[in-house]
Length: 197
Image (tube, rainbow, N blue to C red; front, side, top):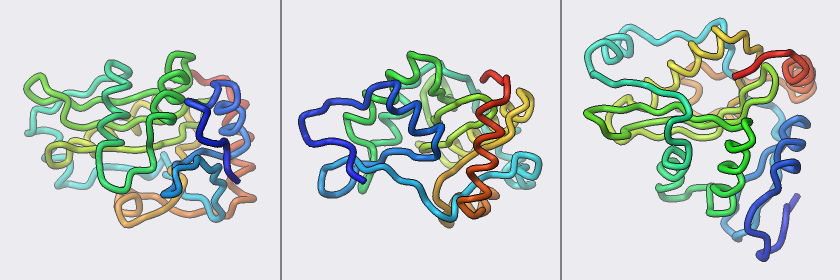
């Protein structure tokens, strides 16, 4: 379903927030329009099972990458958008930056030698986190941010880490698919939980 015509510069915060509570999220397509997506099956990261492998643990110990939360949200989303075939356009950057300002979108930054080298951003409602996109400017920096996020979500008591669609990369990180009907039950329980990011 298309969201809008070409005149709208961003999705209002309340519309974007409401869509996530219903399991929908926007993506920009090649025709230049924004469409709502609601996949079946849905890809999720089982928080209790996600752990870095031995090689990743070595990288995390030795690569001198520091992670932070919400220090540079717009830079993270722009870095995620700066690649061929991106589904993130200026309307979505504006929309998610506004949602970040409202306290419902968050970023994890990976820094090396003072520079932003990786990161991930997404949306948080109750005990549900919806991962949107990740980037790496140096090897494994995005994965370092991802594992910092997983640790944080577990510590805060999150119940759901949604990754929308499965692909080879998210499957390597531990994503699995669940039927949409099951996902919506998980979503309802998570968004009603009194958890804060």
